[in-house]
Length: 81
Image (cartoon, rainbow, N blue to C red; front, side):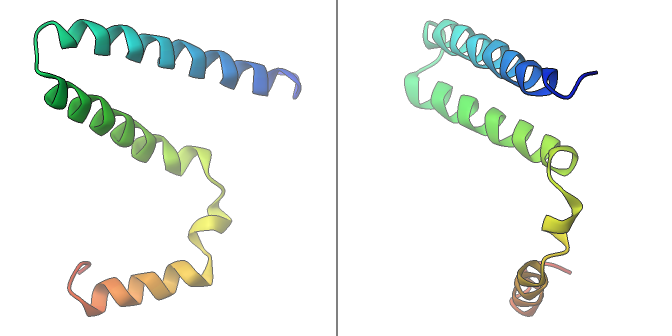
């Protein structure tokens, strides 16, 4: 795939996902109360981002020395094992 088409592909996928989310959110308002619908919508977006993050981020970001310091802090306070 040509390098110039990659941003276009990402933008198209983002637009389709955003449009789909708006349609699903509006339909869910008819059946579920607003706060529950918003919680599900935000939670789903965060979950998808977390699942895609390892594939979309560079490995250097995970090897950053600051990330190691956070790991030590979390282990110290019992958040990580």
